Length: 265
Ligand code: NAD
Image (tube, rainbow, N blue to C red):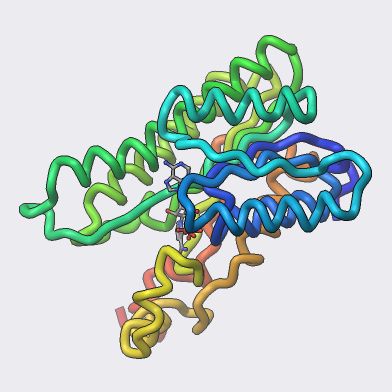
């Protein structure tokens, strides 16, 4: 537990499923107040159920589920406003929402490229901008956590838009970390490896595909949501307050060149 997180206020994008939902839950367990963003009908239930679960335990709402497309200016502004209207302030903004789709690059439609960059990279910029404006206006410390991926560094054939967006998130995060460090505003990435969530549920339902992915992970297991949400709580807390501009890679060793494992290289 991180006592300094109690009553801090966060926005978590794409929090109706998977990692975002896990991070929002972990924050709520710390006593934080959370704007739980969802986008689609599919994720609405996860967000609304989570908010209802925590609001049942407190006299004042601890969580609010808010529909918004965080990849638009209006959507990002709506999420910021929800934090102010419901909780009166903002301390932590987690840009988690993301999408991926598989195409050979010579057949990748422009609309798919544009949409992936829009959600995964422009959405991170728009959320960060809302948070930065608030922290600067209030002259207060601030904390931005961006969800990148091991594919901020590992190339991934047939996922060119995804890797381009995540590489962009990494350098964008480093840039704002440097730009605002003297104002006590931190920005870091979490870079997960393969974590079991709805984004890869279809793939991991196929035992051969699951085995193939697992064979690339020295720890010999697919990651779980709480492997990531624990790190998010630490990054949000003051325990990590000397860390900025970094990517916390959480991947069971996937980025350690597993083919060298037996020293035969
Ligand atoms: P997920 O599909 O469960 O979560 C993504 C969420 O983003 C969904 O709830 C979706 O509704 C939401 N979303 C999509 N577009 C949105 C928009 N425009 N506005 C608001 N919300 C939107 O999958 P996940 O694994 O939890 O993914 C979360 C993040 O983690 C993504 O950025 C993903 O790239 C990243 N990631 C996941 C893995 C993994 O193995 N699961 C690995 C590395 C990185």
